[in-house]
Length: 506
Image (cartoon, rainbow, N blue to C red; front, side, top):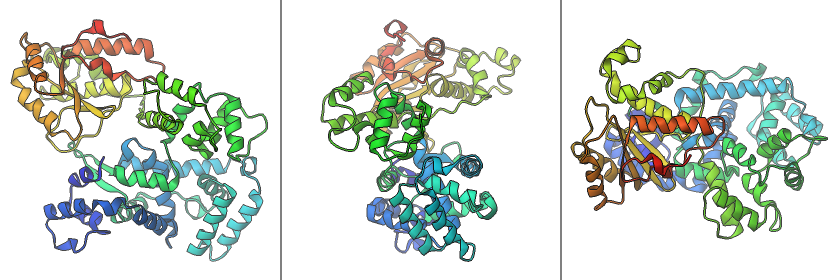
């Protein structure tokens, strides 16, 4: 989410004042709307690299060790690895606790000397720092950071070492409380790294604005989400043991004797960037241009360009893959089963089967089932929407968007009755809309003509697809791709007028 969009969706005056604290002068005298305008006006200050480097140093060398630890976990380990650098407040807190507990568990089963040379020397340095007043001062932390980086020790390895001596995340390996996390969250907001955003459903999110995240990635030498990196490594172009060992060796990563493929992949994610894996460490390293071009072609990307351009194209493709969390129980699966009934408002069946308890729930659960289809079956995560004036769903489609709106009716849907509403959504979009999908039970005969009429004056095409057609498509996709990670190619929806299943090959 862009910085200005984040600011537009800050819900409370208190939160907005906190975000304004770092760069807006005399912000306490401004009204809510005046303050929003002032924060947006100072947006370049929030994404200025020198400013962000100063803020990073403020946290990494903060006198309060809780601030140092939680800054690293929340920003580097969690939010920079989230889709759109966004996570709900509750999920952030759960992930912090889970991360800290994972480090403690690893400390009980992980031998650092298997991956790190001279670990005894580094352990001596860390022990010596903790000997003084049972704490690590700012100066000591600064020295440890420099030694760690010089020795090529990852921050996670350092955390494991501190946990092994009973000092991570706090003394006696006690995980941080939610109050601790909330305190640091507010500090991150006041320093302009996180903006608190509330969506149209009232759900609160921690968001690093795109411009800020891009700068943070550059500072931390991060070029891809960890989940995306794991997907990238599965490609046949880099997956071989020989290639991985070659890149790790050139990256001066210590290898265990006779490592298996899984161990090599883990070492790559821990120690290399995606650019280093694909392009190596010199002009003659990594994949040749022919292989890169072939890889781009296999992904449906442009195959021409320089070697760096091809590498960037591949990494960007994988970095945009959304993370789909599959839960054992998802109530939307029930709504999906009755998808056609929800679309046609077959209230008797829906009540009988316990799908709805009130007639008013029909529209909402029709929308929820549609989200389930895209997220869980097609493996494409819908975008977060803010405000109240928006369609029922939005998907990223290259540099454009695909929108959809659900119409649950007991009769055929007439596009003419809704075209002004849909046109507002399209016109007000911050990005071009390639396709606007209308999902309903059936459509009137003149609705297809209305699509053609709209296309004469717009770059957006309107697709009319029934709930049965969309569910049939989902069922076919489950059969052919239910057990793999492939996502549905959204280009199949680039049809103007009524959906034609004969044009789709899955």
